[in-house]
Length: 107
Image 1 (cartoon, rainbow, N blue to C red):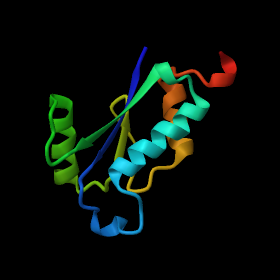
Image 2: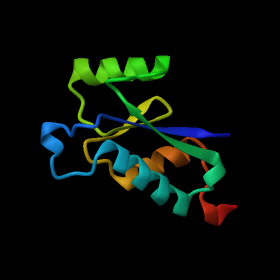
Image 3: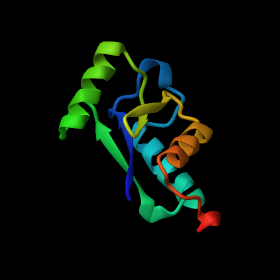
Image 4: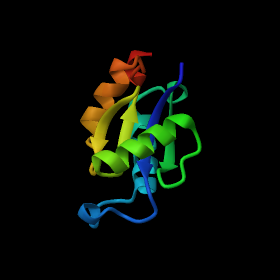
């Protein structure tokens, strides 16, 4: 099983996110943080520049970001938004557990 943590953003920070990490930095941070708590071969973190989406899923999320004026970095797990603008680890961890990713201590 490989649960995908999608992190959407652009090179340019959103106006409300000037003092926050970029989406790429958020993706690296989430990968490191989740890797300390969860079995690493059960999840993958993928960054996507929503101005240049490559997959159909990315194109759908890019459209939603623009149409719904969502804040980025936008974190999506199992098709659900779990973080917007400044994602919280607790919400990401809860979504990973809900998706069946096992914590390291339970293995």
